[in-house]
Amino acid sequence: MYYLFPRSTTGADFVIGASELDTRALADRLSNSVKFDTQLSFELIGGTVKKEIQIVGTPFRIEQFELTDQTFDQYRFARRRKVSPGGMEVWIFTVEYVSLQKLICSRLRDLDDLKWTGACP
Image (cartoon, rainbow, N blue to C red; front, top):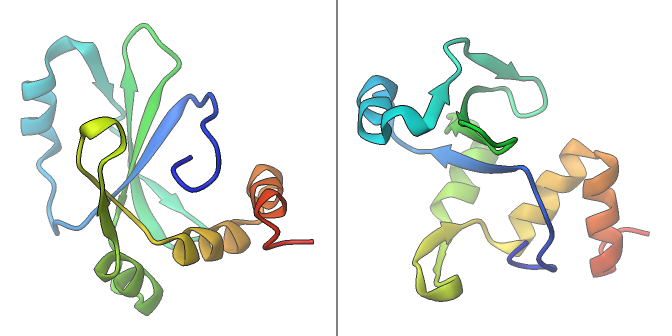
């Protein structure tokens, strides 16, 4: 959304660079407003472990992807940049790595995003 256009979404994705994220401590800090999925899932396309958090009372989900030791993952994480949309600092991947990830996934909505930018016919 940062590079293209704002749109409604029911989720957010985060790549976690820490080797061990203490989800129990995070759950305790966030109280009862979130529900942690206790089942880890394996992301087939990226080959990474994914954890999900559901915001209670909403359809909104947060997906946490563990940073892998794959070259692509390491490069895109090392080359991320800090931006301040709405005055809040966050780290995001460069537009090149976002585009490459969309091509790798090749979901219809990802390909539509790339068509919008002219990066995909």
